[in-house]
Length: 254
Image (cartoon, rainbow, N blue to C red; front, top):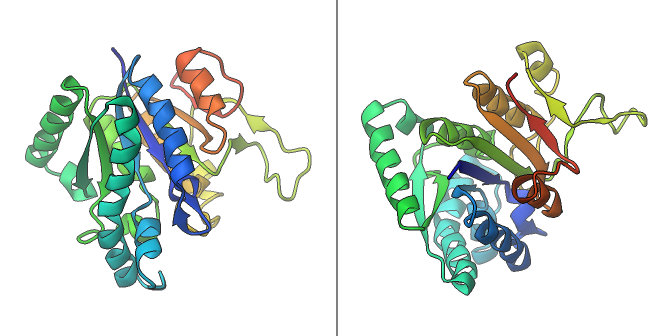
């Protein structure tokens, strides 16, 4: 059975700054189906949005975001637990930092837990430990964390679900003839650098640049990546369950 990492961004799970139960349910509907065919690891943002729904605190500083994440993480897991229970499935929380993957010992500890959970049919849900790490909370929205998880936990593919529905050959906001690139086999630093000043959504910190950086990490290691909209899950469903690409971006090493 192949192993995949599904990464879902904050904006996909949020509606007007608050966690959307309907969107979480739709995601869990998909996850349940995927778990019949794959070993699935979920990397989920959304803790800050959950926290802001619980307490009136602006996300105008790194410290406030850390506080919101600490409050919201427990609620986020409650939401996932409730949604997955409809299918008799369990989930488990793992809070990791980039530094955890810098240590072979800590990486192996985390890997053993993830593999043990998968063996039991439990969905591992990974998020950044925002109380002790700030890199992703400032810039990244777990994109690079998901790439590290895919690499070190030996996944066959990283699937990134976000508010970005694909990768265009030009900026669609300024070029009406811009077309979505369906397949990309290589990324270079110059291409990625052209997107570094384009920020993410209001409720997330990632943008296309951090997704391309994450994708390049995997392409360089002969791994595959699929980028698709998290709002229309039929695209990723067709791709992963029916072997049909009706949208999104497939990044494969050739």
